[in-house]
Amino acid sequence: MQCARAIALVLCALFAAGDAFKAKTVGAVEDSSNGNPIRKVVAMMEKMAKKIAAEGEKEADLYDKFECYCKKTAAELETSISEQEAGPITQADIDSREAEIKSLEQEVEALKTDRVGEE
Image (cartoon, rainbow, N blue to C red):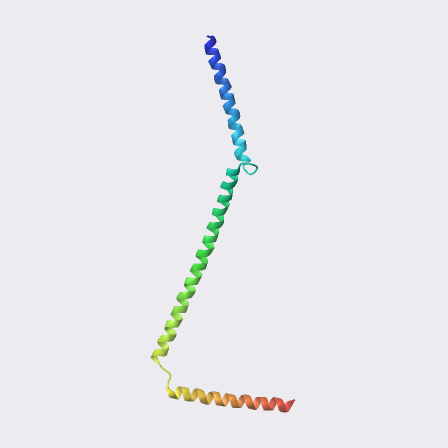
């Protein structure tokens, strides 16, 4: 009988000690920023993972925009090339552009002399 009482007392003491240990470890987990270096490292790695995920989203967005730009530019270049291949520049086009350039140069000279004359 006394043996049973002794066992019961030991078991009660163990349960009480277990509850105290449990309360102490739960408090330590809650105060992880104060002293537990492993908890600090884990928290830092979690922050880094969030930051990397955000950067990945930004990179994906930039990639999508750049891909759209490339497709648009490629389409414009293809259109321009096909237009040039369909209607190449002839000597008549070159002559008309040279005549236009000469007339514009003469007009600029005339305007310059008028401006100098007004001063």
